[in-house]
Image 1 (tube, rainbow, N blue to C red):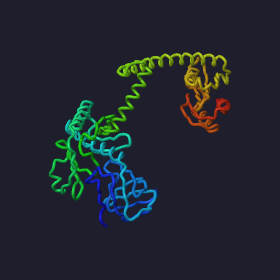
Image 2: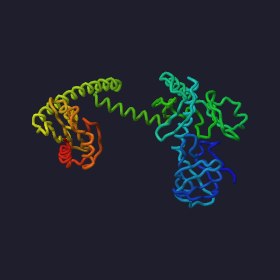
Image 3: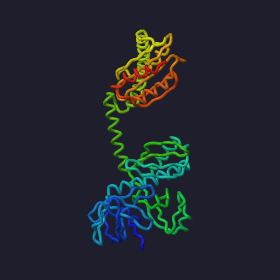
Image 4: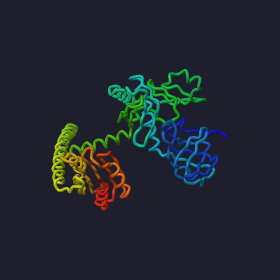
Length: 397
């Protein structure tokens, strides 16, 4: 069986073509259609597949099957000869991202000798993984500037084929393991790579290359970037977000980072003050409940169900009760979604609160656990909290 002729190999800008249907097969999504030639790019090498229309039917996916290319359609009601139309907006976007990746990867090699070990093109952004986790901010900025300089110079991007033996003698950025005639993509006087993807014809068409994020882990540096139309849309979004932040702060765009940092510091200080107030209130509430609590076998048992708004105090109250003079046990519950329960006792008390908690949860539901002197749980039905505390109290020695 003859291999499918891949028209995009020689003309990435081809949008319309005609082909002969070789065969069709059933597929869970409809039908797999095989042609004698195609301009549709199948997913491979980190680049997603094309979309478009084949014989008037929408192309759902395109799959690489070595010598063949499967076109996934909703149905296979096709004549022997069909017209194909490649979705250009998606195709050109992928061309910008993929060519941009070649340029950015080469830039990292030029700047610090960092090799790209993997590439992934997502719906919103793309990533490359570099072979070192020691790529610093300075090298990242230098690589981004160099890559964009190559874009602005509008260098020619040439696609050509060479026999494997000849290709191996060229200065490829990364050795190729492919067999047969090798498809090469060259960015003039900057990068030469073996690649089967679709690319623009000149670096200027990439538009701009913007690095969005850098993560380091497991010996690699992952660089997230956007090119061309994606870079423009992301810049618009960033500007919109920054403009709204400036409006909320009643300041200029340049002052937003400083004001955010100041407000964050103010919030931290307010949070510390609030925590101190909550702790003081918890101490006061614990002392009040202690005075009102009945004794059971010489142990004061504080039992209380708090409203959801008092949830931040509940655990603190339980601990504060356990620190009161004398022997005591706190059985505190909090309403809300989810509910919560806290059991605490004077250190070395007679109960095993871990067991008490397990038995209460087994009867009334929820999850939790703890140690002998302190246990906590949650997820009990709100209307069963009082009953759960009464049951827990019945288990105390």
